[in-house]
Image: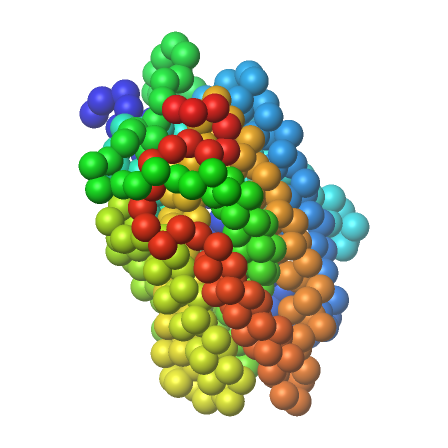
Length: 400
């Protein structure tokens, strides 16, 4: 296997880890509630510390990736996240749990500005490479409820942190041993190479692109964070703990996440051929009726609606990342990704208290669904800021 492929494999695994570790605790909270060890909202709240760190450390991680070493930062992520998860497994109270989750979020924050910038420069088609990378990330989302539920059920909640932490630490050691060092100065990404089918970007475009990124990072980030945090609880409420095996909260949530993650392969390829405005309008507008229908309840109906919703939620990710990759010079790319993700992850850090606010034991998550539907409408409106046709020119940094 070539050095570039080995690097890309570790980058994809790192994306899975970044999302997996952030979603361990929400499933642990469901498991603890089912054993009568507290109220779901109270048990979930320590996760807020992790999501705050996940957002707050994105900017310094992107800056260090551009100014020091992106490969070095990835090694720090693997090793630090593994150690942080091991420490969290030994937490003995809510404050220690919050501190451990904060540390986990701090190291997981490295991935999005650094790892995705490296994927965008991998030499593959930008949309396709980001789509495949996105599937790995969402497989981490999918694995978290199922693996965490299994480990917590068989070995106790501590094992849900200790075993993955040891695996991540081992991955970091393998990364240092197997990934070849970075080559010299980064050249222009293939994302910025002119295409015969592209049109020149208008002078007013940079402001429009930035406005779009800000709006969608805030509103879309809340939709992504809230749905990935809350889905195990939605499934538990829908089936009332009556099922076993696949018909369980963790199993159903993981099934939905795993199936929906395949959407990124489709949208990743599509963004190399279709104007992003058209894709974003379609995906955002589909979210609105799906969220409103979920408020009406049901069992397998909820599963089908949740699958449709997560297909659209996951599907927008490679589209947005490709927009940044196409319009950012290589030397600025990690920092631009950092700004994008600090906004989306920052508002995502509010997902835990918003989910707790949006849940009512009698009516379920009706309030949450209405709020997320309003956010989806905002994302659709922001998509109108994107150009209707493809174009060529780096507009968020030096011309590539």
